[in-house]
Length: 495
Image 1 (tube, one colour):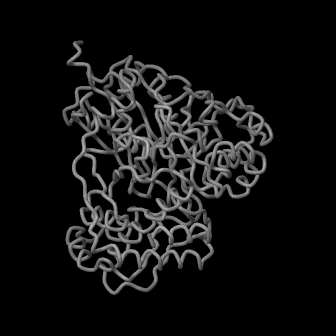
Image 2 (image 1 turned 180 degrees about the vertical axis):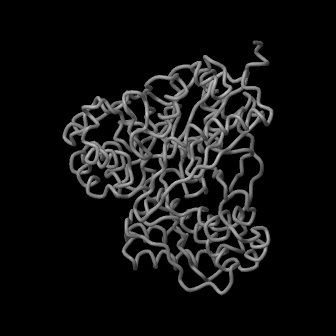
Image 3 (image 1 turned 90 degrees about the vertical axis):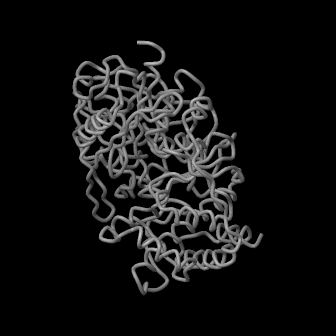
């Protein structure tokens, strides 16, 4: 194989609603892409998927990319991202023996208290101070309480992408420190906090070894090659969470830059030189393969409601009607699922509106605006913690397909926003795979192409400031937003 033939990289994104695959060259040309939907079950705090669906969906998505023109023989390496905090248990043969508890499954409330009591010092050192009940370690404790045979049966914890990596290489694999962060992994030391785990009754043998993202985990096996069309021996590299993958795919690599992903939910992540410490335990920091820190958080607000509420509507027409209504005095907090994680922790948070919408277009406009206001509060929160927030802002995620929403977000933030071309978590994983033959910065610069930058309209500042402050008051009245955070956001608005 000549150098010109072997310059492709494959990224796999395990999302909430589906699997996405891209095959891209080292200069960012897309050779092919594919996708396959996933189903899940939500009921109150419960959110599960059948982990057996993941491998079937991956095979389908890779097949679509190949059918779209991607020559899989050119792929030199691949990496897989996954939803943060999604876990299952595998038996000795690598078979999933429990449902997958998804990233926002909130049943492990009591276990979270145990985890925080046992690991208080460790979590403070890590910068986030407390684990949330949707994080992986409380959920692991929850699973072990219900499957006490796990340890003696030789079962192992698996994050979502661990399941796929094992399928690809045909044997047990280490897990990456990015996906393992919410399981308690020390991102700086790439080590498990064994004292804390022992106090929680979690055997070390239950946990996979830890490696930094970008580490070669193994090679595509003959069996996986036969099932996927990939070349046997293709390198499989340790990936990251979907939020980190989207960050890499956005090109937000410089210190002070931020990627805001408005997908099913909102994920905001930036780049800092130093670890950000959060006394409220809202923001947590991944370690970048470049050595920088990636602070951020995941909200339960997002575009997921668009599909839920407006699937029967012409979104283009609805967007045109909503444009004439913005800014709207109808304030809405558009939670996709109960409970909030960022920019405040409120397990009892529920979606609300300041009044009933008069039309479907007004309901749509208030959804777009409400999500943009929460995004602004996330930036205000990060600035309060001392994170540099004055760098470039890159918008990615499904919401960027709506031009009105993009401009609205620039107007609400009152700062320019840049839209990368072809930005998606799967591309970020292709960038990470390509960094095995380059630096991360070099791979991102070559593979991520920018589309356009939107400037904020100064005429929109005052009405959005007023609406934003009113929404802050509603959060405070409900007891969700701490006064100190609201006061800081008000001060930033005044300036």
